[in-house]
Amino acid sequence: MALASWNNCYRCVVLNRYSAAYTKAYEVSTKVAVPSTADVAAVIMRGYGEQTTNSLFVEYYQSLNSAEELYKFIKAGGWFEKLYPEKAKGISEARMFSSLSDNLSITVLAPVKEKGEANSPVPTLLAITLWSKDEKVAANFLNDYVVEANGRVLEKFRLNGRLSRDFEVEKCNT
Image 1 (cartoon, one colour):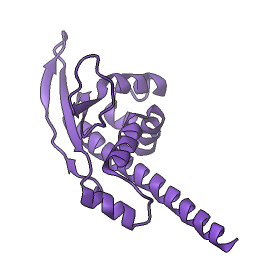
Image 2 (image 1 turned 90 degrees about the vertical axis):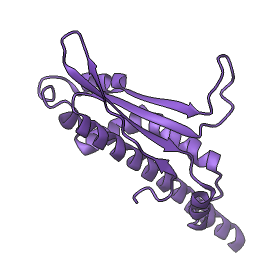
Image 3 (image 1 turned 90 degrees about the horizontal axis):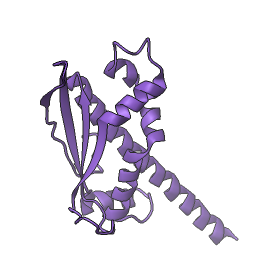
């Protein structure tokens, strides 16, 4: 599985939604859970630095929420053309990105926070939802996006782990 370092529970939910003009829209959703302790141990064993399930998942959550990273992912994968084939030629990328951002949501499913409660508990389960006219393209988008975010986080920890090791070696040599 491409996401061996994360404990994922993917499930796509497709619902029809009709607007006033009766155009079909589909709600596609995937869920991502906090990594298991075995997954965290594997990350540590690879030399990616000392991590916890919380530190990994917080970094992953922040990566998923980054508008800059989302834009890079969309551009690199040609997702504007795939998600908006009828609009790709006549509308600016900024408008398509705005539309996509409006139709994409990341929700913390667990732990459930009471109204007015601080955000202190670290999320353990996320739902990423996208409304789209093409449920297959939306499902592929979400699956590819969580894989990409996973890779970004692991690459960041790999680089930080290497820098930390290099610093320790340099410190020992002086």
